[in-house]
Length: 112
Length: 114
Image 1 (cartoon, rainbow over the protein chains, first blue to last red):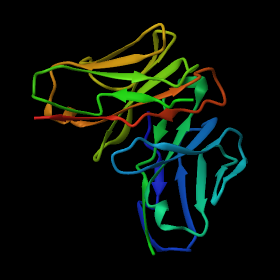
Image 2: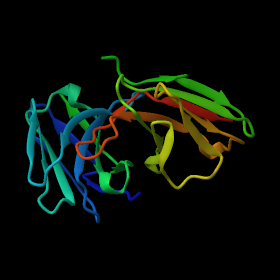
Image 3: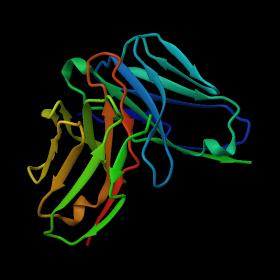
């Protein structure tokens, strides 16, 4: 599989700020997934996107499936300390297999 | 519904040994995928099983193998362990039936090879 380009690599923000991260690929996907991972744990699914142009929210999180099918972004509004963790994007094209292709992650630190 | 479970959670082995890791998927899920996570390489796909058949395989040496049982539980095996095999091994389960695919991860097995 390919490694996706995820940016930024890390973010250090104050509580209450909004956060934006994105992911790009050289291949098209029919599914984009966003996960959060905390130390010692497996990735936890935050948002799943299945259609180009789709915009989906989960509480303070909003993600979009890019219309080119090669990119996606995740926004977190009004960040809180428990948002700390590593956020991963993952793309999948189920027409060519079920392997998720991951970005390298965005490490988020939130200060009170 | 219970989530994905993995056993053991932690494992210490020495070079040359072999190891078997176990994964129980979410009830009703027939696909189990395995990933290796390391600080340098990130999350990399090992293989995926669906209905006891390996459907996809990543770019790992033959020392890495797996299988799936009729109840969808899966095991992966690593033979002749090397220091570089130290990693977090994650399994993910899904329905495995085309578009709309969503993979849910277990807590992982952390393997340390000495």
